[in-house]
Length: 610
Image (cartoon, rainbow, N blue to C red; front, side, top):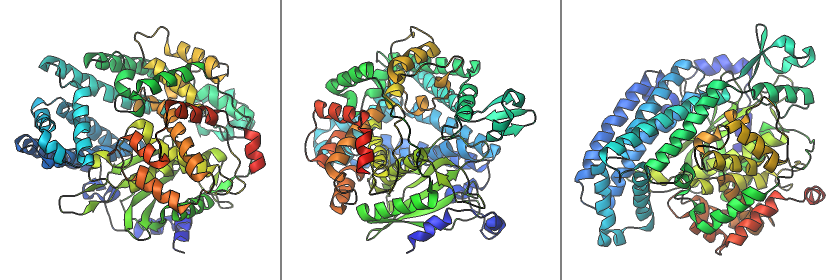
């Protein structure tokens, strides 16, 4: 069974590292030739910007028709292929020179994108298409939707404003990009403390630096209460510069929203999502306002090796979707760390679907966060070939030791399944346009495949003797996010709002001299959209209960899941995909019932079933 090699490949033996570095020919990152050195980002960026200028001219001179949408998607693809890759490299590459070069590329391309989103002539070329009823009726549904999504980007960027205000909107967007980047960096920086402050017997849990200890995370999986308490108080100790960044970010987002015609940034962010439905949004607010989050006590359970988890995922994907994961040898320079592994995703009849780079292990300067990055989106190229998607899954797992493989706690296990759900969405979203490929869809739908995978991770038939680990409080996060992005100026400081919200919603007392919001990196990517986890959880709950709870390996349901939900990326209205999967139109009450029942799980029933 070739898939077994996938698991063996994930274990890095120290003795083989020299062989690994010597036996491979020099390549650029992800196989991109220019990126074999930091300076290559400038070359890749210049090439993308030059191509974008040509495509803008082509779009403005092309008569209305399907080619207009193709050109817009080519334009988006060319810029995203550099920006998306750089977005990952700027936070994950161990070489500071690479991170710095990637950050500059992100800023440069981000600035160009914001200018294009307020380019009147470019927008007019799309308006002509959308205004031509005969041509629009001739387009297939996916092409029509992509055209409308590109217009939506123009509208929320302020294309309707006069020239002076458009320039102001661009400047605000660029400043927001800078603030987001600064906030992300600050959110992951460790805090230092004199080592003599901590009891000697717990110091080994933290990285030593002279007379100081670095605390780079919450150590939530550590069994020692004192370690967790120390990490919590030190890592979350308020930082004045980070607080200033957050306040400016929230104020800038509010200014941008009001400039382009919205009451708050939250109103702007909810456009184009499933929750734009006023009925659903109203009920969501009631739930967020009134919920008390009851956390079941944690349950200590056996840990699982990374190899066993990957074998479990491979078996699940094989049974449900006819997909296997195979390890591929990388070329020297293709990956940014010697413990990164490349998986080919192969369908039993369709062949190669794409690649997943697994950056699973901890290393110095790597953020302690689990996430999925699109490096290259899938699309149908002009020559008729399909551009295969490439993604990175980034986790923060401990390395294997000489005596034991990498072991996962229940939380790590669930996060692995969650992020792999995003990866499968990217692999199977076989859209014509990269603008809507895979996870490029409304935020409140993008989390459905990942949260659905958590149900598989918690099902005893999928992972035998797996102990369910308690939920981590999405309601609290969503409430805080909505308040921060609501009416401005805020009625209190962000820390006072945190304290009030935590005690009201989370049911846990605030710890003095901590500022958790300064580590809440999702405020960048999910600004005013963190409720998406709630919406996605409600959908995932309905899909699980109706389609997979009876048999989590049901191939027919797996094929329906691919056909109705994964294949379309963002190329179809999310609610239509949900209806196709459930084979009914869920009501507002269905969403609410699904969410409430999921937040109030009967833990004892689960234990008995297991």
